[in-house]
Image 1 (cartoon, rainbow, N blue to C red):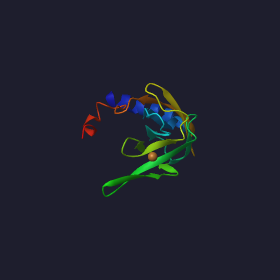
Image 2: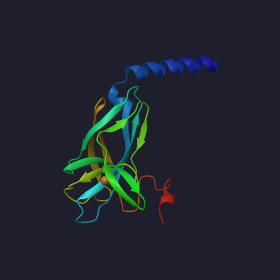
Image 3: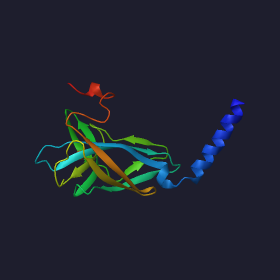
Image 4: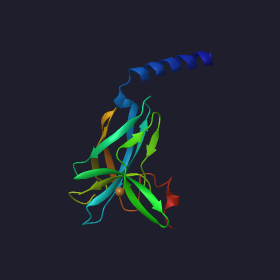
Length: 158
Ligand SMILES: [Cu+2]
């Protein structure tokens, strides 16, 4: 009985996957950012890209009405120093999940029209080669806070 149910469910999910468009197979979720101090014209946004499609994709560009430029940056550690390096394009393999998070990869918002303020939602448009445009809104948290404070509390307080 359980086998039959599992098989039937598998068939239904399989059909759903086949019927799904490329847009829905790749998702960008949990977008968030941190408030920026007055006078600062750069900020960072974080999110999770999940490519459930059977083919790889590439993030070709990103933009926001709040910034003149949005780039994907990776954090490269060289000895004691960390610097940011542009990733262009960002490859997302088939079935790959990429987490953009503090200390790692992030979306760099450059030329902010005004500081990012706690509680606001920053619209972001991600343009993928296969999935096309994916629109998200990054929720802005207070400095020192983040979307996963409970999970990542061990990263703070050093
Ligand atoms: Cu950066």
